[in-house]
Image (cartoon, rainbow, N blue to C red; front, top):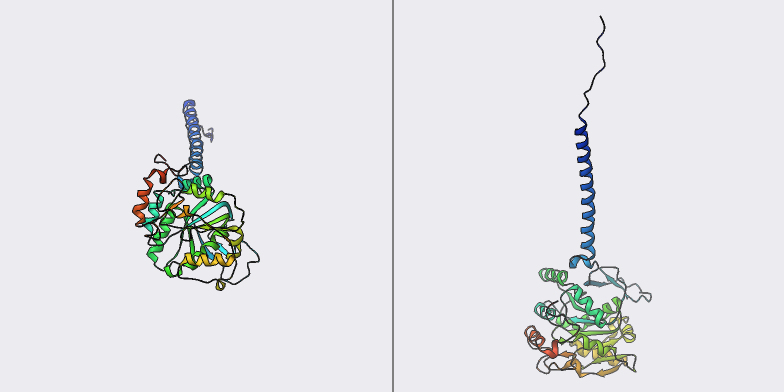
Length: 321
């Protein structure tokens, strides 16, 4: 009897099923590749031209501390500065440090609604137009809630230079010296400007004032009350000196005046920096002699900004921006 065959027979699947499966696999592959390409486009647009936080990777705000080891700086122009980023000295015509404190949140908000841009792009456009960098200058406090609020504000507006010094009214001269040291270490600037957060300023006119030719290479501008300005050569001498050689008075403006006398700089008394009202030439406005700045600055700042001679500046943002 013949043995049964061990060969197995398989029935071939219909050709139409194979074709449909091949088409389905190809379609899935194409969709997968297209999805990857689309994802790459979305990510790249978000980094290059998307929202504000993606467009600018490098922050404007910076916290600075000092190397307190006592080691020699060896001529290093950063003068022992340790920042929260590896930041080289940025070349500008002028660095304007707006002195502020933990109780001045309302003042800063008024400034951001008037002559100082409130966004990263606006600050950059202002620097491009005037050659001036504007930052709020503030120290530190042991109050954890206040420090948390400051960090939140800095993250939102990105317009601070934060110093490693306790923020106290009695220590304002020390804060002023720390400000000039930090400003010089971070910015390669022709002028270093100390301003207050209770004045109305015209950035375009300040830029023109600083750009004027001067016969004296070391000049101190101001009206002995507000807006002292320093040129680079003498400031370099100032920031590299040891702290004990400086005479500290209770008022920081008096202290700065004494430092300038000691350095024998040329003083340029310019009343455009301390006008009592907005004019066609005023650079800074404050309520002289009633107040050391603007009286009720949060309100007065907004009122001045509605005046044509104050707000009509080519460097200020328009309502449409």
